[in-house]
Length: 183
Image (cartoon, rainbow, N blue to C red; front, side):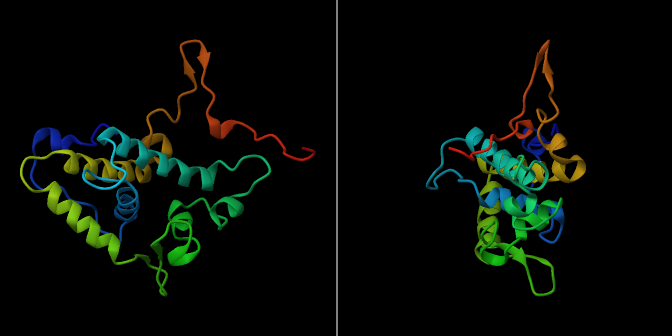
């Protein structure tokens, strides 16, 4: 994750996303499409948008890798898989992630509003001195790159944390969900 935002810090040229037909480019578009940018309804802050992207990634990761006791990935992701892209596209155009699906040939696809929005956000990100839009676009792409490079542990530097000093860290995905029967 150290490389995320590096280009903005060095004032490089154009912010770009990986190709839409690449795993990293597809995931980045989902993460970026699902958060608010400055001027949009729901915008709070840059740190909030970045935290939201990481949260979306964790939701997807949890659906495929961290089903609570008593649940299966099929129940959580509508498909039995360990592949994040299969979870994203499960259920078709209006499935798990609205607008992200596989076309009739099995290729990753998205509804037309997504590439239009990405073009719009990239245009703003590349207009003038790099700012919030550029940092958010690079963060989303960097998060997707890190995920496909080394899983959630690479994307979230705290994912593998098990102790802080002598205190054990309990991750919510490691907890058992108590049974609701008999209540």
